[in-house]
Amino acid sequence: MQVIEVAKKRYAAKVFDPTKKISPETFKKIKQLLRYSPSSVNIQPWHFIIAESEEAKQRMAKSTEIDYPFNTSKITDASLVVLFCTKKQVDKAYLDEILDQESLDGRYTLPEHKEMMAGAREFFVNYHKENRQDLSRWLENQTFLNLGCFLLGVAGLGVDAVPMEGMDFSILNEEFSLPEKGLSPIAMVALGYHAKEDFNATLTKSRLPEDQIITVI
Image 1 (tube, helix red, strand yellow):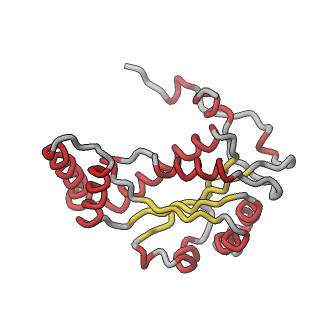
Image 2 (tube, one colour; image 1 turned 135 degrees about the vertical axis):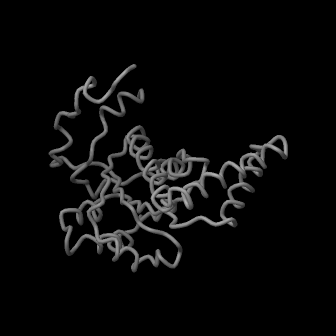
């Protein structure tokens, strides 16, 4: 399927069929999508908690039961649920870890290329930390970039999904000890296959007109 067709076809599933499960082969591809998302200077400031078991999905669903009950069944009926988390900060040890992995993966044919990348990454991190004073937001933006690519990617795999921010993040923080790990939850994506009663599956996709959102100069 061509990418434009995928973009037009994908939608936010509202009701999942709990009897339909994602295959191990597709699950493997889903994890690859999470890994291979682009990010500014390849900073990769994310961590993903994937709930596959019924017990794990119930733990995720705790964050919706009080104030966001409309999202509870989306979590419990889904085949998989991905909690997108982002690093609050990045230190030199983490930057060195990325650089070492890039070197291990063969990205640098010359030592000076590695040094240039290290300098560029440090420049942008310091720019957002000191000049813009928005490092946490910048890191969060990279994780949202991953989420956008992920939604398109899973649709290309024939998997239905729904992104959600309607949940109590403080409950997720406590349930998965995220602050202790230097992480913040930003969104959740439930994955699976829609049920017949999913009204959103048959609705026409609606977007603003091209000439209203695009200016060609």
